[in-house]
Image 1 (cartoon, helix red, strand yellow):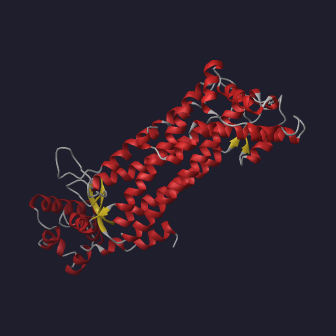
Image 2 (image 1 turned 180 degrees about the horizontal axis):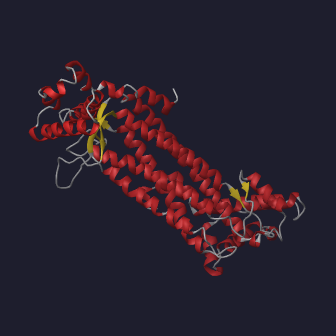
Image 3 (image 1 turned 135 degrees about the horizontal axis):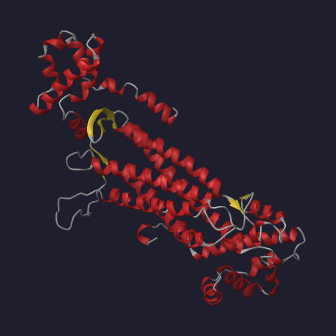
Amino acid sequence: MISRYSRKELVKIWSEENKYNIWLEVEIAAAQAMEKYKIIPKGISSIVKKKGKVKVKRIHQIESKVKHDVIAFLTSITEQAGIKARYLHQGMTSSDILDTSFNIQLVQSGNILIKDLDRILSILKRQSNKYKFTPCIGRSHGIHAEPITFGLKLASYYEEFKRNKKRLLSAIDEISTCAISGAVGTFANIDPKVESYVAKKLKLKCEPVSTQIIPRDRHAYYFSILGIIAGSIERVATEIRHLQRTEVYELQEYFSKDQKGSSAMPHKKNPILSENLTGLARVVRSYVAPALENIALWHERDISHSSVERNIGPDANITLDFALARLANILDNMIVYPKRMLSNLNKTKGLIFSQEVMLELTKSGIPREKSYKIIQNLSKKSLTKNINLIDLILKDKKIMNKISKNKLKNIFNYSKHFKNINYIFRRVFKK
């Protein structure tokens, strides 16, 4: 991923140096196991650990000739550790190293993404409680529906990201497997105890059946979860973009002192960060399809998945990490305008209370369809004539014969819409 949308910690995980260091760690762990079970002479792993250092440039030089990355890596380590390094990789196949190491990189990335989610959850919890009873309009189809609170809106995001954390933890567990089973996964030339040792050493689980590779349904699950999280990011970003529109302007992204919104129009304050997140979410989701297509490989293995994973492994994780960090900063520093929310809430002159008036008429004995039609007609008149709905109702004798003035005033009141906010918050935040 380009540096503009990258953070150092994730970039380091997907660096060539870290990848080869993990390869070396896997090879050393396998050698330790082989020593323990007297498959190779003692002391090999310690010599390799002491003398074998990752030299990325040298590995690439060798690979340019041999056209095989694992052979190039092993050749480079042997050059440093000496002839005893020939005992490395005994009975193993390249995928034992590649797949186990790739999974470790995914686990390392996933753990950082969990921290990102924890930060978002912390911010959303604080902001939800801050704006718990801040009235704003609920919208369906982009049209004013009934009152909600801004805190409730944020609480829905909190609950969604709670689910995302649970999903990601499950995906990390799904991907935390190790395969040291040799060619076509039969353990023909390597003892299964070596795999068990390596798995325990590297805090992984043994892949029950690994063919020659770790099955790619595990990876498809992991990348699918990243795609779902990206969708959640876009959901929040899209809401912020809408609420910052001039016609709405209920909140805005933080705009720094020296920031400029447009090269042509000095007045502009654009929701550029949220727009950026919308784009990045599309990128992350685009990696889900190739991950799913990687599941179906030829027989016990082919390498059609390899080029895909060399791209989506770093890009999906690095991009999502950046997007989560950016979203956290937006939510932490957003500027909320409660007065504008209230103003927008009153914009339709009481039309948002139409359902309750209709329901009260049905209670009085008027059929629902007829009640609906009565209030719909008055609502249309309120909208076209720009007259408060309650004033039209007060002049309608048929309605007023069914509903008292006090009852009507109670209907046209925001507070009852918020009577169960505490109940919902207790369910979300477990208070």
